[in-house]
Each structure stands twice: as structure tokens, then as C-alpha cells.
Picture 1 (cartoon, one colour):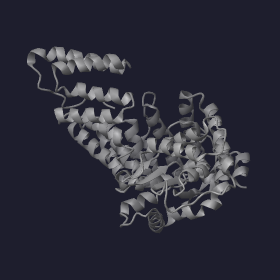
Picture 2: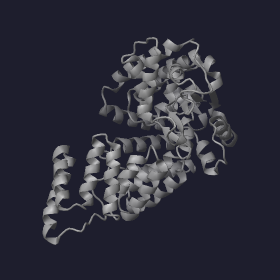
Picture 3: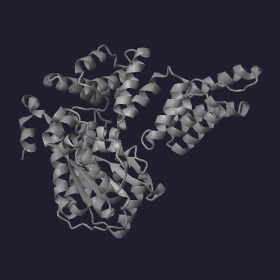
Length: 484
């Protein structure tokens, strides 16, 4: 989020300019130091003297977002724009706010902010990375490449640009673009992107050992920030196995109408194709998509607590689970949109989800298990207990077996509500495969060529499912588990 930016001038009496600027600076310093109350006091005091000070209003939006009040933050930033239409920071902040829930609107906000402040490298990177995440990969890479002329060696822009070069078959150039980048102060997310983009480039060049080393460097950097991640992961995995075992072999309800008829879960295993479909659906006007996983977690915590102690769900508890889920995701029927929950690991909780949402549907992606686990261990994630289990091939294989075991235990009674997509079909024939998905979801209309292209992109490393070249470097025990 941004505190200042271009166009922040306000109509303030010349005699009070210095006093106003001093109050504003004190508010910024307090906010940057984490002294939220002091910052709020400074901004409110300033606004009594200069009610139209867009910087102070923008600062109150920053405070609201730190307190978790997204709507109050939105209100402040819109008010800041009204007070100073040429002030870039609130546009960029609104883009950050909407990038998950309303990406098309976020793109517009970013574009306006960059138009007002073209030298805001972080805003350009935010837009380029968002374009990539919604399937507009070529546009994102082109924007990043152009921006590198103005911001040479910006790690995030270099990574997005390099990804575009890799897609064009120019992996050597991609590696060159990422040479000499200073990652020490780049931030976790950007450092991840650089390491794993390098791994992707080496994979395209057939340099398996170099690709693995680069992915391992990314993993070590990530784990160093969260030394207890693997301990938390083992607890999470125990919960996962417990919930899955509880539903194995149970007859589950099915209804064409009822709770969940507006809800679809994208499931399978990470790097099996769910992300490509999510990128397409994220831009669809009739879809509300979430991909942070917390909606499912809220429902599970309501049902079982943590650590998980499975218990039969009473009708009242089932209703409480639905309410907990809806509070986080958004209530059904809002804007008559199809709610799509993108959380591949939810395949392990499918029995539970089918019980609380008896009319929900599932789109399940399936890929060669070795390729899926290898790809998962060679890319960056936002670190959570579950994603930390994906950082190593061996632990990813353990998680894969748990997820598949849980799904198999309840899959037979869910056949009517499930569409299974083979990853090889998605890559080889994206047009007809995507048409099949859209028909299943009840989303009619012509599919743009850009969406088809985004849907058919390969799922990470190894490219084209060619994992055999990595076999000499992989755990034989894990390979044996995945080959059963």
C-alpha cells in the first residue's frame, strides 16, 4: 500500500503550509513505525486544519486496512481521489485492495495511478504481475519489459519480463535478464518469483540439476523467514487426514437445489491445471472467485475445532459451518454470481464440503502425480502450513497421497456433481476442454481466444510433463509412493 504519491497538492492557506506538512510528516513517520494511534491522531488533527488534505485521508485508509476494515479503507481512498483527482497513491491502493476480488477494476485503478505517476516502479510491477495472474500474460510481460528500461534491475519486473521470454522459447535471454539482481531487500514475494523463474528457464533448457538448485535456493530463503513452518505443516496435515478419514465411504447427500447450488470448488492438487482455469474465471463477469483457502478453513474450524477431533455434524452445526464459510467468502446470491472457490487441497475435504453444501459442484484436475509433486516443490507460494508441505518433493508426495486417499474415499457418491479434467487434455486441446468446463458451470457464451490460450498454458515445472530428466535427483522412496 502507498502513503504518498504524485498530485497530493491541496488548497491550503500559504501561511499554514509548513504546519500542515509537519503534521503530515509526523503521521507518516508514526505509521511507518507501526504507531497506528499516533498516526491516526496526527492525520485527524491535520484534517481539522486542512479538510481536503488527500495525503492525510489516504493515510487513514492505510490505518483502516491495517485494522482489517477493507470497506472503511475503500471509503477513505475514494474520498482522497475526490479531494485530489491527480493524487496517484489512492488509485494504487485501491488496485491492491481489489486485485483478488475484482481484478478488472484493479487493473483500471493501477493504470490510472501509473498514468499519474509513471515512475512508480512498484505500481508498474503490481499491474504487470496482476495481468499475468489473470491470464493476460503477454501484456504483463510486455509492460514489465518496457518498464525495465526506466527501472533497470528491478527484481520483480525482471522476473515478469523473464517469464514472458521463457514462454516465447527464449530461456537464455530470460536468464540474462535476471543476472545481477539484488534480492536481499527485494521482499519475500519478489525473491520467490526470481528464484522460481530462473528454475523455469533452466527447465526449458533441459538443465535439470540447475533448475533444482535454483528452486532449492528459493525454498531456503522462504523457510529461513518461517523456521516453524514444517512443524505447523505436520499439524495441518494431521487435521487434513483426520477430516478425510471421517468421510471415507460415507454416503453423502446430493441435491440439484439447495445450499451450494451457486458454489463450485476447483480441486485436485497444486500445479495440475486449477490455476489456469482460475485465471480465466477471475475475469468472467458472472463469477466471484476466491483463492485464499480461508473460507474452507473457517468452516472446518467451526465444525471440528483444531486440532481436529471428528464428530457427527448436527443440523445446527452444519448451518453454523455454512454461515462461517459465507461470512468469509461472501453470501450466496450477491449479484447473482457463481461463487468459485479455488483451493486445490480442498479435494481432501470434499466429503465435508459436500455435506454442508449438498448442491455444490466440483471441477477436479488430475495430472501425473510425479509431475504434479515435482512442479509444486519447484515454485514459490505464500507460506502457509499446507504450502510449506509443498516445498520439498518428499513432503509434497506425502501430501499428494493423503489428498488422493481422502478424495477416493468419498468420490463415488459425488460422481454426479464432479467434472474431472485431465491435465494432458487441457494442454493438448484447451478449446474443447474449456468449453466442457464452461458448460458444466453453466456459463454460456463465446470464449475469447486469449482465455483459451491462458487456459492451455503449462503447469509449472517440469514443462510438458517431462519429469523423467529429474528422476536421478529425486527420492526413490517418494517415487515409489507416487507410482502405486
